[in-house]
Image (cartoon, rainbow, N blue to C red):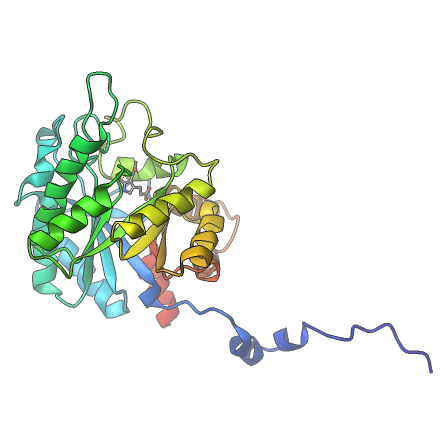
Length: 331
Ligand code: PBG
């Protein structure tokens, strides 16, 4: 009898049934994988839908506390806060970032008061506070100056830590800021406040809806290419990560997310440290618009993209879909 030309090994065998697929899954998603970014605004009882981010709103401090409870109840371990600072509190030097009673600090205190068992991550960069929308201080030519900006970022970090922030996340891409912030946190008695460095943050076209959400889009002239990374570069991301780790970062972030999963995988392979990715506003909007146009099933698109982060090696993902995805997973 001649041997039929059947495959010697059938990889389809383990895929044949749901129980077998579950048993062979290499990665799993859980609500503990998510960090939920939230936008906070002035007022009381306020919800302001953000047109550029369908399904996402800015919340006043009293109502953001309710979101924190929902997140905790769904098993989400951590929130990321971003303020939509009132126009009359924005200035060229972003001094409002240092105000102990600014919107951000009031939101941190309210959440830590009402829901002490959820983590609060705070963004460090001046763009929600500057009248020009850049992340740092400008010289007369409009160039974002590095070291003077770092001095302000130190103050901003201490201000957030004093209000109760658990994780300081510098997103400004100034050189040397992680070490400077770490040293200041130690000196001021915040030894257990973590730093998650936006280590590989690219000058991306995917941040547009976020700039609407924090009210900096109309203010920003030009771009952020002289401090955020060039999307052409991968090796440079590894240098950024190495520096931030040497300066004391507890974890690192890659941003944006899906178009940069190669960077996530390389960082994970090279450094074996906790790596997070930010599925940014433009990525969120792409999924929402694609689903609304009938290009795919919304829930399936959401869960597949989030799983891709896990497969690439992420410890967790910052995603605007966090609450919805957590509830889907909880069933
Ligand atoms: C501020 C900051 C930005 C984002 C997070 N922190 C915008 C920017 O760098 O212009 C973008 C997040 C998103 O698009 O969802 N430095």
